[in-house]
Image (cartoon, rainbow, N blue to C red; front, side):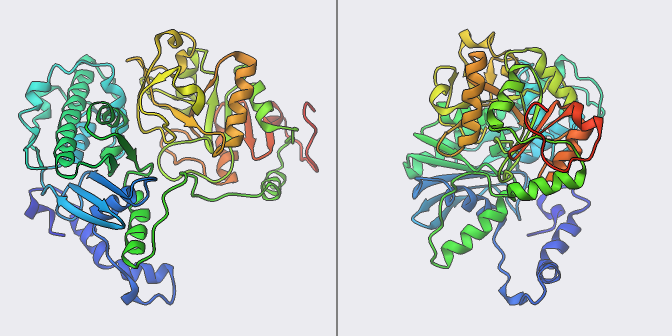
Length: 479
């Protein structure tokens, strides 16, 4: 790594970043007493991202990988190829040129939190038209050699900045739409360059830019690769997995592909019940929690759903979710109020994999909510809560072999409503991380207007929760 100023970047905290990297072995010794500092290995940032995609992707022993984010040590991008368990770098774009940093600048310009709220810009883009695209192309474009130019955008000349919390206007949405279109064009050029050198069938994506599901869908639709797989923890959290996979492969141990994103902690039924008793909340243990929740959803309840291991990455995938009825258009506003977030933000549908193709047009299966799909016209009025303003939805397909409980819930809801789709958004409120442990779930349920908490095989109803009373045993269903 080099100091930021030497790479044309303005980062007053860069010295802390460099110090943290240099002192990492000491930090690790503090967390892991007895660790030998000589055992610490440094994995380059973008190589860790690349490994998190290429080495984790199923069915991709020979594949291309594209990494794009804000910055690594001296670059903002890596194009590479996986051959067996080896990653072969092909090109890296030197800083200060960075598609991720350009998008971060726009995020801040629009009054959102930089390096955190970029997904809000993507959502806002659907409300605009890309009328400023030609101007942005002067500053952001592929250079034809596997790299790109991306710096110096005069945002204030294109549109006045917004202060945090200030209401956006049409020019702000148009600027977001223009930047989104420019990003997509540049990514397609990079993807085509990469395919021309590898001729692979499979492309894997990682890095923070790979969380842009609108761009991912365009790459899948218009790009030259037969299949596109995106690391579900594509942001910097994914480098933990990537660093481990990279060293695993270097050590001669074959990495296993990711079977799912549920890599976090889990609790047994007995442990969950102990939490509920300690919290002194009245709860039930119904015969089938999926049927009970489906009944509540059909009655238009909002349900907090806490099941199995927590998810790795920024998406709720049926383990730590807020669920709602997709056929009630007001549920979008209702959920955004529950979560305390902007009303232009969409919520996502989950659907059993075998039903997805009749409702949604796009890359299938889509188990990680990393692509957007066109909603079939005949379904848009039937599931309005999950249809974004541009007629798309960021779907999660559910395979009953992988997620039997969620699949059973979806089937039970469809029997009651005729709709094979349920609203699924993350179990948290604005500015707080996703729920992980039972205490998180109870605190979220107690502080947000949610009607039912399904935690393992148990359910807690809002009325009973606030009525008080310390339970000794689980009440029967309906009590």
